[in-house]
Image (cartoon, rainbow, N blue to C red; front, side, top):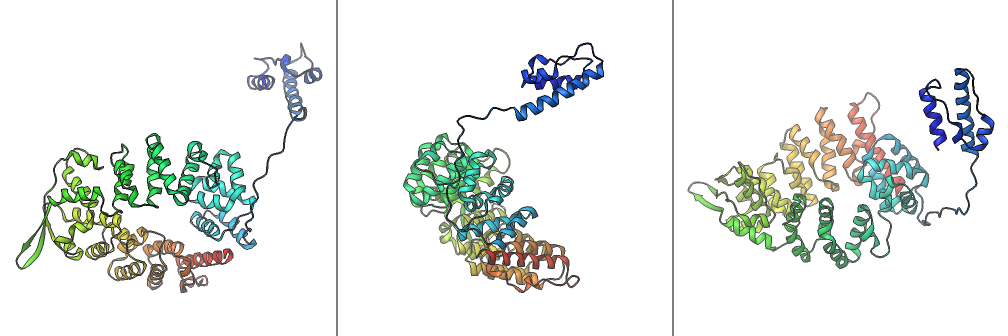
Length: 485
């Protein structure tokens, strides 16, 4: 309203420098105020304030009733049961306690149980999910139609709409990135042929971040039929897309990429026997090769580019290639000539992680227990082997190295591994690094480990504060799961 802006400008500048223009006021306000001429300056200031007060009341109370207004449609009905009162109370505490990892666990557990949260908590949860992306999918599920209703009316909560079932392909063609990803995830499960056809049709027009995201989602439903699509993605202009395509192709058996990389590697490696001493892996660094670019390997110019090419070739070569040279245990124990030993071992580790090869992962962990890739290699092993391997590492590694390993272990952890880690904490003396690792362990062990003896909360003064914090976290999580069961 121009009249209001005029009054504000007059108040800011002062009546000595500017006179209010009452002509722009509504007739009803102007009749009350009138126009004072020849009054003192302080009276003019009072008149401005009085006019502002009258105009404010006029604007608040003088509205004409809206015509043709219709009531907002309510959210769709949700037939799921609400969480229990105790679970609802715990959720309210979590929302205000700044414990996002426990809040995420609560939401995911509630989603698995098929229950919903009270609508009064959804806005606060949506605000928390704005800052933490991992909360969004489970929140959208437990909030259900109420969350979708709110997300349609508040753009900052639009991610709550992502999990709503959409009719037809409108979500894929016209939806937000979140809705399109949700549609694609569902389609990969319900109609994988249609999902792959839709992605192929729009692939060239997708932005780079979405291309990488869609490839990652495809990786959760990977099949041999995806090789041609992934092979074409090796030439993508975005490095993240190329890297994802190489990684996914590494999980497929007998691919064209694997055969091409094996052919290149055949010219670069040989095993030379030495009498009375260990065999030697002889490595010849590969030179420039334009065909590598077509296979997604783009090495920047400068020192070390030959070594970078070798890393990429070994990492993308099927580990079955090495069978003619020896077993994984034999190969990781060989001396290496022609390049640093670390280059070869790290490249083998990348290949083992991509191809989920347990024999190679086990051999590499035993050869270099404190290596940078050890945690990821442990994640390749079967649950019982993970537990046995970490128990063995706990006996041999120093606290510093073991703590770093624990912090990097891929999650979620199997129960066997969770129990090994809790037993390790229980046997340790007070140490700053142990306390740091124990805090993570208490939050990350699976529900089946929550009745461990460490969950008994000591009396104040009986144990170090970090031990009490571990017990409280384990107890809190156990009660949380019991309330949601």
